[in-house]
Amino acid sequence: MPLSREQVEQIASLARLKLSPKEIEKFASELTLILDYVEQLAEVDTDGVELKDQFITAENVFREDKSRKSLSRDEALSNAPDKDEEFFKVPKVIG
Image (cartoon, rainbow, N blue to C red; front, side, top):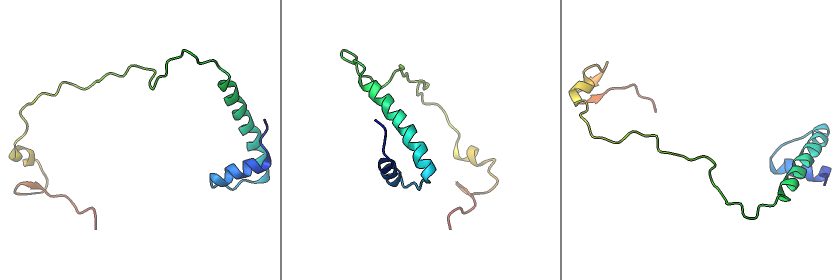
C-alpha cells in the first residue's frame, strides 16, 4: 500500500519537518517499504507465544551491602584545598 504525497506531508507536519518535493518522494517510498514489512509481521502466527518484557535474564550484580568504617570528618577534610571548619569550600557555580 503505497503512501500518497499528502500522507507523507501530513506525517512530516506532525514531526514538524519541512521536506522538499524530492524528499517527499524519497520518504514516500521508504515509508511504504517499512509499512509493508510491518504488514508482513502482522501476518505471523503468534498463538501460544508467551509475552515477554525482557529476552535476557537480568541479575543483580551489586555487591552485598555491608556496613564498614568510613572516614571521619577530619580525615575527609585533611587533604581539602579549601575548607571551613567542617565543610569543603568550592567555587560558586550558580549565580
